[in-house]
Length: 73
Image 1 (tube, rainbow, N blue to C red):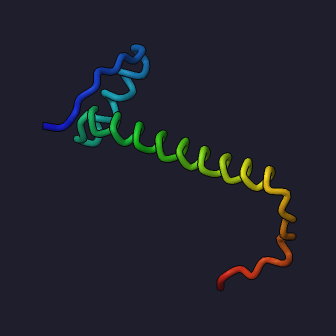
Image 2: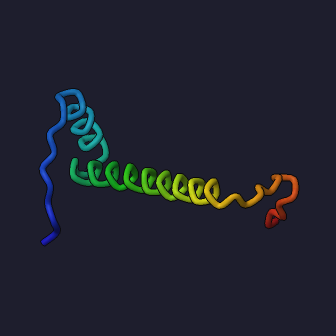
């Protein structure tokens, strides 16, 4: 079996989730899982970018001007 978590939401969020679920035929669990996955993806990307910026800032390396970047076509 898949791991399970319990989640408490306010009434407005529950109504919105129920409406979306009933309109699309997808379960509330489907949408809650999708929303959580998207949130985690975005925050993990943010942390990766933040860590890379911190590493660059501490490295004392020179920045490259965007005009000097060879972008793939």
